[in-house]
Amino acid sequence: TSVTLIGFIDPLEFANYLLFFLMGLLAFHSRPVYSLYAQSGPLTFVAAGAFCLMALMIFYFHLQLRDVVVTSIELSASFFGIGAVLTAFRRFHNMESRGARFFADASYTIYLFHHFLVILVAWALLPYHWPTLLKYVVVVASCLGMTVALHAWVISRSPLLRLLFNGD
Image (cartoon, rainbow, N blue to C red; front, top):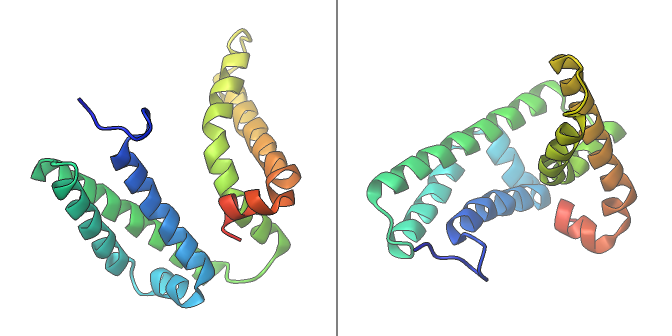
């Protein structure tokens, strides 16, 4: 049997996502942490996060070493990829702009809600015999539009929701 929190939350998945959320929150509120992560190789954070998660997995969830190693590699690759993207944007797009700030703030809203909307829009398009590429463009454009609108008209206007979705 698998362990769940309040009946449906997988604690291992929760710990995995919490690591990314806390790293993002820390980097957002601390310019030195962001700079360190974006410039000097994210492997320091990867190692720290991976070792913390490995300890949690082994001692709390009693997982096998193989599962721990695979998860650690996945986490390391994710953190390294995020660091590479941050480094690239910092190097080639290191300027303030209202548009970039808006999309940076909206990114978590887009990420969280696009899954549901992609399925909903794709399902709604099933009866239409349009070319696949056209359906893809409609799904992408409509989901981006809906999630950006949700952020602009709901999330960004509520202090509590701004804290939960942007950390500020």
